[in-house]
Image (cartoon, rainbow over all chains, first blue to last red):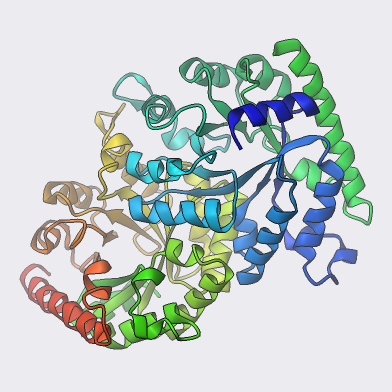
Length: 271
Length: 271
């Protein structure tokens, strides 16, 4: 998917919601546990009930990998079930030397046809660029994450009297462009989103820190929105575990719709 | 496996060789392609012919992941085939927020029973510590890698007038200890290995940069060895692709033996 198509989707649905499919087998409602593939059945119903409110889905790869070969089959089926006009993110946080990153890219972009993958920057340019060689595919690079540990290294002052996450943004922005790179930008503090937006005015941000991880949607829109929206805001647990009984998917749909309505208002206000 | 057992293995075999199982389906000899599981068959023969010279095996997870569910089956079978007294490394470079890292840990330490996993430090403490909660299991944290891109961020001067990789070492050394953490330390320059050794005198290093990625084994031993050896030096392509015909495994065995003999000499000289 290209940037124009993604923006079109955002305008059509009046939403920049990404639904995180962190599907934990131990939290799937009991009535689904007897299904042949409970993880896929859960995802299918979540997708059915959130598809009008979401512009992106983000399976967290760890949850599938933890189930072994069967988990990869559930992931593949889930990906095939997501309508083709919706943006898909493999939240995998990969990154390795060149020939290895190339294999990860092939796994997620060719074998599995994801639109994008999250990548960690620590190993530098040649660990990231192999993911940029695929047409209409995206790297979503970790810049500033929303977890407690983000302070350990991302907020270290680097030699240029800036934080490490700023060095990562400046340097990596020269490796790709706003048509094949996005950044993970945590929403724990509005001022940081504004800083990142100043450094990379045209890139999309994937914002993980709304909901369970804290952060205000109003601030994200106020400080982060650009003229192509430039935001995908993720919610995982707040949506997919809104209910735990037979009506789990309806409840997920209601939560997704609430966020979409708030996003519709913010798009009118800030776009 | 604990540190004492690993050191015992090193002394018994007079070797600190790790064989990297970067098994590329397109480079497997033709006569194996007709097997039901060519990747496992290849690994099995490589293991048979290198097991006397190696103290560790390191499957590069990307190569298996790229093959989908079938690849994970080949990986599982390979892991089960490796004798239990040999150290196993999942070269996966994972790292994510706490609950996700915990799932990756379960995938590699419980579902698959690897002794260790490589982890990227960018997301900080809470992305690393979930891997430390498993008895006799190890985190191998990226500190200084041997690829070109290692200069982009790892060699940035951080605020304390030290390189970022030094900040990573200092801070992360307080999260674990030499019995549950190792570090990836590239061998491209001996002086850097000496720097790292000064910061973490007792930890094991996994050294990837010997052979195809350059670096001298003599320098690694001279600057990196401690009183528990403290080194696992990896060779992947130089061993597993030493031959490409029916005798590929014998040729791999010869290359592994050569490295083991050199290591035996270095252990006598520096231990």
